[in-house]
Length: 88
Length: 417
Image: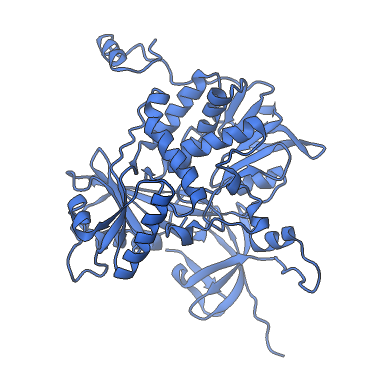
């Protein structure tokens, strides 16, 4: 059993987490013309890197969304950063 | 030297102390150039090489493998062969594979031990029985054998399962494909390798591709740990690592890599002579000729390139088996392993041009690549030899993610890969 660090709750059982997608994708600007290729890239295509990766995960029990940097070959977690912004 | 296998050659070699068996394939040094290079010496790569040489008469073919033949997913699966899909396009592809498997041992003169012991997809409620009858109808309309079994039929075929009325998932019936079954996975890789070698294919093991030779945007060969090898046509069949090669080749794929686990128990007396899958528990099992129960289930939940699984999925799969057949609870596991599989958004494979000229891909088979080896190799060889799709592979071109014409078999057949 692996434990992942939730930025809000700390180390928790991996079953409480869900992979949401690769970090760094930007939704195409729909006020402009968007080509099929751009949509396909946004919806489906991904890097799926072997080694260090940067991904969005959600801790399903507290609904914290965060960026997790980890190694997809060794499964080591390198860093986590909350996506939530503090209310000013 | 015995090159052709027969009862006679076994008898003759028996008298000679088995000293005359030839190696199954040569181990040549790579040449400078080939007509076609296949990257990946698993089932799909070796089958592709065999059909390229046999069906298309391509003379100079090399298969490049970074490890040993069949050391990836070909040697890590649960050996189930079936074509119980929903969409006509999928049925065409997977049933081509089953038909080729039916004749394969004779075709390549190597016993792949394809045992058509049948495959059952169980149902656990009346609503599931209705969906099952829809699937059976679809399979029959697509020209594939399918039967809808009621609980009595299921009990006759697999008495080991749980038929108690207070079961958490009571069995109502099953979708049954009698032509489905199991094969010997190593034999498929070795048999295709031997047959391809006999047709002149160079099989080069322990040779890792480290990059592609790209000239003017066109792929002209590969860089490997054994030097540069040139070719105008490269076929990539490296399930689990497809995205790693894509990064090197300058194209992109809609694939995530996940670990998929499998288990074998200690050998026990025969209790199961078919394959049973429960979509509700996500687990399935069969029994090998040696007596071990061969157990599989769903993907791990974390994208991974580690060829090992994690404990939560072990618990899910094994508790599913015990739910299906509580009598097996005390059977001990003998071995347990994982492979890395390509998971595509619509649970269907990708066969076609990669996006970089000169490179073609065969990937995205998800958790079901083994059963598709002969068919996948057959249509991929057609693509590499002619530069054009076979009619059966055209719907699986990666351009479907742009056109939107997806083949969602996870929703269609209820088998999630």
